Image 1 (cartoon, rainbow, N blue to C red):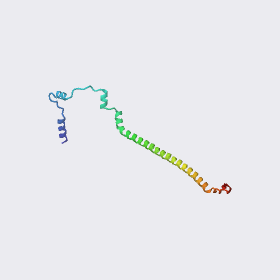
Image 2 (cartoon, rainbow, N blue to C red):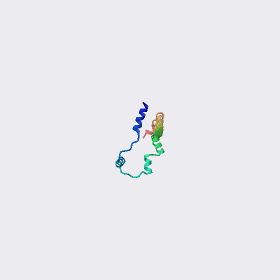
Image 3 (cartoon, rainbow, N blue to C red):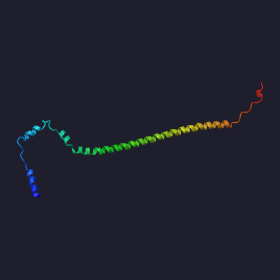
Amino acid sequence: MSEDIENQLRRAMRPLDPPEGFAERVLRALPERGPRATLASVAVLHPAPRAKLWRRLAGPTALAASFVIAIVMGHYVAEYQADKERRAGLEASRELMDALRVTSKKLDQAYEAVNRPPPSPPAAEENRS
């Protein structure tokens, strides 16, 4: 049975001569000749191994670069926020110290006013006219 299949394949695959005028019909069906292939056009059709490697690695490289940029930018934003909060805290501390100084002065003045001896009554001689 396997010899039968082999014989059928040989008959089906045997070389045949093309019919009369086949080559002329094929050449007429082809488009007119364009410019001859140059080295640059061949390079576009068959890219160099380096170009294939770059195409294969371009996606992962771009993804890794975007991760690095995101991390660096995130760190920068966090540092900026912390610095901004630090400056706001220092400004609030300065304002509090100024307010405490003013309050202390006012309390000192009030203490002196309360504890100052009352003025003595005018002498009787001064009221004579």
